[in-house]
Length: 115
Length: 114
Image (cartoon, rainbow over all chains, first blue to last red; front, top):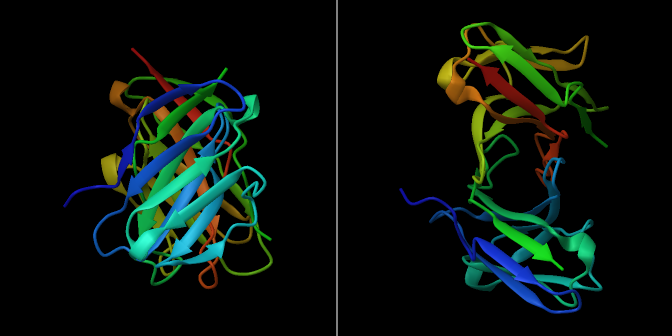
C-alpha cells in the first residue's frame, strides 16, 4: 500500500514570495490533515478536511494561508506572502476518518525555509 | 480543551538500558492517547495507541505504554533500547468523537548511546 506522498521535499524562498505544497493521501482515506512543525516543537494542526469539506481550520492564518482538497483526494496548501516565521516542516497526514481512534499516516513532509 | 505535556525534552540512555518517556494529559472528557516516533527527515509513525480496554498497550519495536487515568499519564517504556531507537517521540491526545483533532506534545528526543 502506498503511503502519503508530498512534494516538494524541500523549498527555499524569500519572504513575501508565495509557495505551494502538494499532498496525495492514502487511497480511500476520507480525512486529510495539514500540520506545521516548527523546529523543536510538536506538529500543530493547520487544517483538517473530511472528504471535500473543511472540518477544522481554527489555527490556519487565513490572511496568508489557504488550502483546498479537490474531489476529496489530493490537497494543496499555499502560503502567500510568506514570512520568516513560516519556516517549518509542513506535514500532511491522512486517516480513514471513521473515529478519533483511527491512525493518522504521515507523509515525509516539506521543509520550508524562508529567507 | 485537551492538552499534552511531555516533561523531558531530551533523554540520553545507554544501549540495552531501559527507558521511560513521560507524557501527561489534561482533559475534561474521555480521550484517546497515542505515541508517535519521528526519525530524522521523516514523517511521524504510530508506535501505539490507547482507545479503551486494557490499560497496558503494546506497540511496535518492543515499546509499551500504560494509561493511568488517576494520574492522567500515558508513559512510554522499553525494557532495552537499541541505537536505532534514537529519534523524536511525540505523545498526542484526541477526543473519541467530534473533529478528531490531534493535540501533540512538544516531543522528547531519545538519544541512545553506545
